[in-house]
Each structure stands twice: as C-alpha cells, then as structure tokens.
Amino acid sequence: MRIGELARLVGVSTRTVRHYHHIGVLSEPERLVNGYREYGLRDAVLLARVRRLAELGLSLDEVRDVLADDQGRELREVLLELDTDLAGQQEALRVRREKLAGLLALADLDADPTLPPEAAAVLRSVAPGTSRFAEMDREMLALVSGLEQGSAFMELLKPLTEPEAVARSHALYARLDELQDAPTDDPRIDLLARDLAAHLPAPVIETMIQNLDVPWSRTVLDEFSPAQAEVFERLGHLLKD
Image 1 (cartoon, rainbow, N blue to C red):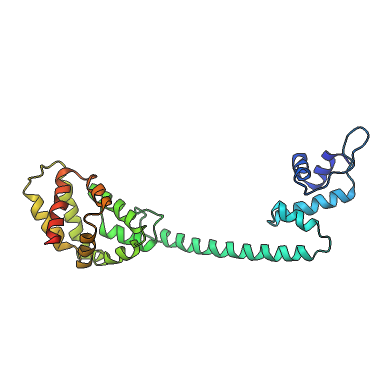
Image 2: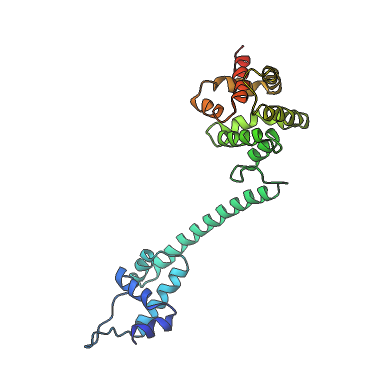
C-alpha cells in the first residue's frame, strides 16, 4: 500500500501519517527502489491503534510509550491514569456548572458575572438602580471583592442589603448624581456627607478609616466630579472625628 491508501483505510490524512513518522510514533517502512514507502497490514494495524489511543485522550508521547510495550500492561496503567484525569475534569465541570446555574437563577445579571453569586447579590443591593455614581461604585466594589480581604468586606456590607437600607441607598446615590456639575462649596455637600456617615454600618466605617490614606483610594476619588469627591473628603473627616 502507498501512504494515501493506508491513510484512507484507517481514516486519517497523509499529513497525519507523515507527522507520526516525524515524531517517532510510527516507524517508517522500507522504501521501494523508486523511493516510495510501501506499507503492509502491520502498519495499518499500528496506525489504527494510534488513532484509537489518541481518540481516548492520550498524548502522542503516551501513545509512543504504549506502542513500545506490546505486553499491554503499560497500556492498562496509562488508561487508568487517563480515567482518573477525566474523572477530575468531570468533577471540575460539575462545580463550574453549579456556579453557572446559580448565576442563571438570578433575576438579572447586571453585576459582573465573573463574581461569586453572593458578591454579585450584595453589589446589586448596595449599589442599586441605574445611577451613574452607583455604576462607578459597583465597579469599585467588584474590584474590592476580588482582593484578598474582599469576601470579608462584602460580608460587612450585608446590612445594606435590607429593604430599608436599599431605599436609602437609592436616595443617596440620586443626591450624589445631582452634584455632578456642582461647585465644591455647594451647601448640599456637607449634609450628604453626614447622611452617608449615618447610613454606613460601623464595621464598614472602621474599614474605610483604615484605608483613607491608601493610594488606590485617591485613585477612586479621581473618578468623581470635584463636588462628589468633596463629599467623600468631608466624609473622611467625619469618620476620623
């Protein structure tokens, strides 16, 4: 048989057969005087075995090792290892599907779908609605939730997910949005800062105090308008007092 006939018989391409020769999975047959490779039945059997092993998920290096041992003992060992690997992949897929099902069960997916469902639920409650400022807050909280202490901080926000607290959050975000183009001496700024201080749970306030001088906190303020940033500057002073 020529290489094309062998490839058609086993159901692979001639390029695949040549690749197997190149990497040593299949030995090259003797060449005829005209330079063509001449394949026999044994070559077809070996090539079919390579195809079956590859379809089972073995790497070509593993296939080469298996074919080097005709006793079959190593093949059983490799297949058992493959079965263990596939079982591990199956379990990982099950866990991922459970997380995906949790996300799909949510009423909406406006929070970052890469977040844990618990964190996503907190974000929707703490920074509700279509407020532009709430959207910025959600992005900041999503960032915080992915940090080392993020889960603990999200837990501190749980009191803000109660219906009355959510309603207050709506009102406070609306007031913050109204300051988008206001001057920094707007009289509404001081009152809003005090209302925010009264709205936040004590553990959240303690955490904010600890991070007031952290560089990334200043970066967050740069995203706000001058009047909005002033609210949080005054809030910081209130928290320290």
